[in-house]
Image (cartoon, rainbow, N blue to C red; front, side, top):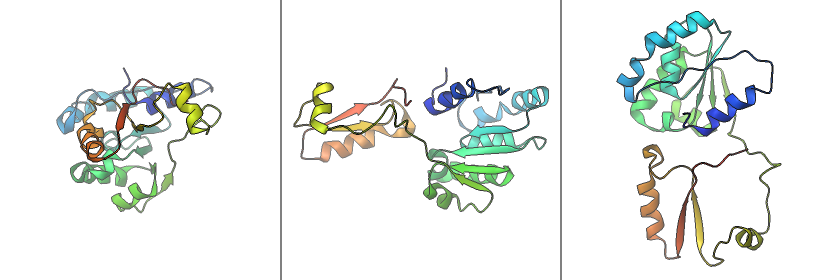
Length: 188
């Protein structure tokens, strides 16, 4: 199961083109979990012989950059540039990569990155998502017109997204606030 919807969306979008691709998903967590993937990943790269490898997140990028036969593009999504421990490892991956992609300028600044770079924000399909009148939207969704709704951009149990902090902040607000968990929704 792919638990990062944007990665899944990119994989799905490749199916619309005549592109030969394969995927490798890191099995395990933390630095030691990632290190267990070095040999299987490099073996897969050697057998598949891709023209290029695109890795999501700094630790994955570092891991795939340990081989030097195939150019590597790393896309950084935020958690890999904001945490000091992970940022350090992400910087090593960035130095080894051919090109780095950041979803915003702040990430590039946090990484103090000076190599080949692209800033490509995560997009929104404007044919599907478009502005409508707020009260009309609330009626369509059967939402209370007086409450403040704050969308939490992940599952509440996703530690990286820090639900407990979001909950503490919303509890401090004087207005009646509903924190809405966004899980299982397509972004396209």
